[in-house]
Image (cartoon, rainbow, N blue to C red):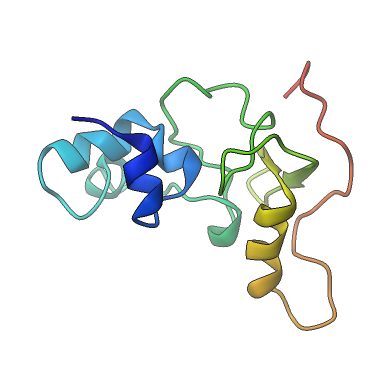
Length: 118
């Protein structure tokens, strides 16, 4: 049974936990999603992407919710692949853990997400 909350409790990001490609792999007992097995790069801001292979209820609106937690987003994160995803304070904390000390997280615009055009 698909349970995004349980997947998140086991360390899966909010976006991945709502993605059909994640569940394709989980339904088959695989360690990765369909994008991994199709060899089509997909990741979030920590991997320098904005979930380009995402398929699910958030498609076209990845700015509304934090990529990591699913909380309402407070800032936009622009990734090197020119996609934008939302981040909350907790999502920013995740990005800070992987940023050089004393520097802002990579890709954070600092702007409030434009949910109408996300």
